[in-house]
Length: 256
Image 1 (cartoon, one colour):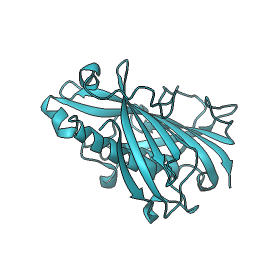
Image 2: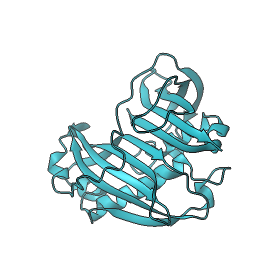
Image 3: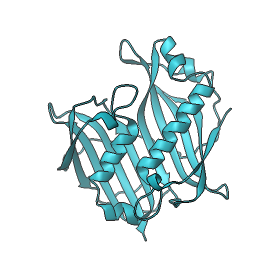
């Protein structure tokens, strides 16, 4: 199937106090449909492992046009979009009952040589998959984020059992929970529209302690979107060695 889709009712665990879909739950949905589609296309976990390869999420951007509410039934879709240099590109959207896209996303993946831990050129894998030309969920998304020198420490987290996935490192959606937890709850609960961009820079293993650093972004906007009411930069750093393991930027548009 060129486009994979699954339908989900929004349940209690998918929402916050505003009764609406959270960022972290959205990343969970996107992860599940991407895995299902890769398996269907013959490039899933076990098929890639047989050739000594694996998928690694490098960047993803998500934009909420509207935050669906508890009790709504939504359709989560995903599709490959070819490649850009070393990155395999995959798009997403979430559609409401009227088939209107309310959340849109774009991700960049690396195909990794598992033994050497080095990225491979994606054409050999992506060239066999549908290109879905013109089906651009979030043009300009999933870009690179620069390091900042104005960040202040907002907290820290130690990677525990519940953070670690099958691959033995912190799952991509758990980073989003960490970001949510160092953000003012009112900012997230009141957001009508929002955009999150995140770059995954290094895997985090069980037991590692990560310092979480944040700073407001001033005078910032994103292409094809209104100026944000609030914008925040984030960086996760290893406590030992001060190495950056992720960078992210959140932009919130409007409030309830």
